[in-house]
Length: 281
Image (cartoon, rainbow, N blue to C red):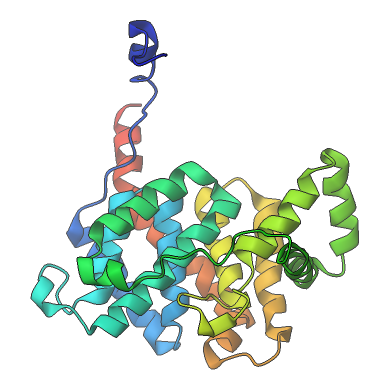
């Protein structure tokens, strides 16, 4: 049984920046949070803001910043626990953040999702964590798999029509299992939960597209995928029974606001990184 890394391998793993990026200063974080949240409030888009902020911080690999975001949105003074808002409101926001982070795994992958979910969990107070759902409602069983695939296919069609079939076949040509994996992942993770808002932390169809835009915009250099999910958000306006926030987010103006807000947060949290790199030239 292997219990220890070989010394040479252990040394190699210390090279090429294995550590996550540190959080920017709280002053810088709170400044961009305050500015962008105030804009969201003017648009009645606070859930959209919380989702895109969570996903942007996750993608830029600042796990501790996700914890700072949680404290910012759940306290009247982020530095004072005694200023925390009501338990119901705090649990609601924590569940939204946790669900947004989970959906990010579709676009960014497992490692950064683990790190940021850990950053969030480390920031949760005991009573908040105790009130969050513990049982999985996404487990694939013979009784649920057909509904999961149908949900995934419906979301795929909603996002990619009129090119859904063409793109399905194109990705299937890349690897025969690839498109089936994507459809199942869409049905299991990216789509709204089966019981919708009856489930804690459920994200609507529009908010799921906000996840895609925030992660892909913050990631950069994935233009075709970003464009697809921008269209996906715009097409969410065709869903039935939209709430007012989703109507705004899926509007031309709302979609532009989502992209611009992601950029603003990225610029704020990566400015020190950019300055450091420039200083080394």
